[in-house]
Image 1: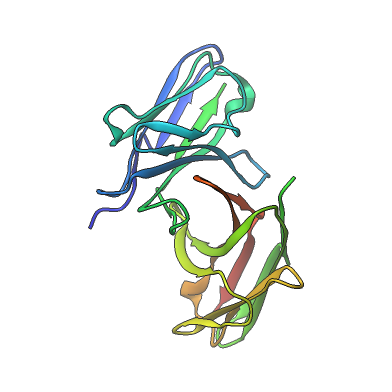
Image 2: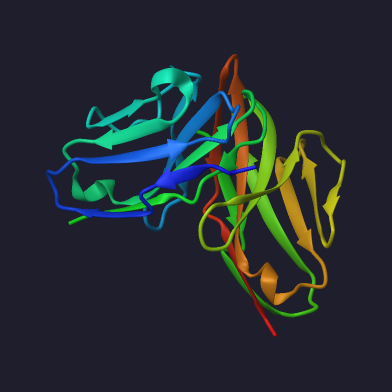
Length: 113
Length: 113
């Protein structure tokens, strides 16, 4: 069974540009989560989808971040316009149900110059 | 604010040694505590603990949770170089249909031959 996949693995962009990250959860997992690790800090929650609905987006830093999950399968996280402090590793996780084990993808390493 | 503290931050041991990794937490609406191992990319799931005092084991790894004192330990016996990794502790907060993980900074374990 394929695990959680994320694309791209690395992205380097300039401040002010737009970047879109993609996450494909484990097949059949209705719950999808985005997390972020900024250098030197712990991994922090961004938001939680149940199918195509945003269940909790309390961790989203500001309105430059937009997450979507049309159709309830894969999800995208767009950062527009990107700022220097957005640099970090963006992880996606999925679970079969709320409260079930979350399985993580390899992350997308974003560097904003 | 929910908080997870792991100690030590890093550890260097020799093959064959036994190590104990610590995780303490303060979280509202606690549901479970999880341990992950992160080598290069995706954090891989090790254990989910929900009940106090019940040890979970997988090969040379074991973990236990104390919900009264709000901590967990992860033990690794007869360490091998392949155990070198960052070990992440995360606590799940669950409210109704919302679930999110709060992570510690991780413990970097290096096992020397």
